[in-house]
Amino acid sequence: MQAIILAAGMGKRLGEYTKNNTKCMVEVNGVKLIDRVINQLAKLHLNRLVLVVGYEGQKLKDYIGHRYDHILKIEFVDNPVYDKTNNIYSLALTKKQLCEDDTLLLESDLIFEDSMLQMLIDNPYPNLALVAKYGPRGIVRGGRMPLPNQRT
Image (cartoon, rainbow, N blue to C red):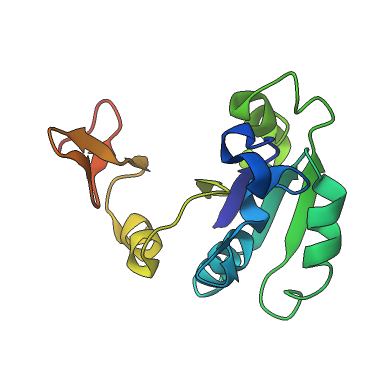
């Protein structure tokens, strides 16, 4: 099992928070989003983490450096046209890695409970997407949706 994190985007909607840094470097409650998710993934004993970078990618690479070498193998994939493409293009850049192992695909700016990743891994369905369900009162916490051809 591996994880791929898409972190190439510019995060323009976050304004000043991402003016000189990528979204996953934003701190929430004193913890950078990237640190939070890497520590969550490390608990799963994955074979590797593939991190797609673009906007301010070198800053992210420099920040991560070797700080996680003892708990998780991290590979970087560069999206040199991050400002002209989207996450689907970033994902396509990982085609080789994607075909090599079962994969958890994550956006770099999400915050979720630790138990969500283990829930995905333990689920009997071979393909599963975790989504935030919109309802009449906004987002429903912990929404999940099986992919087509799977029973709910």
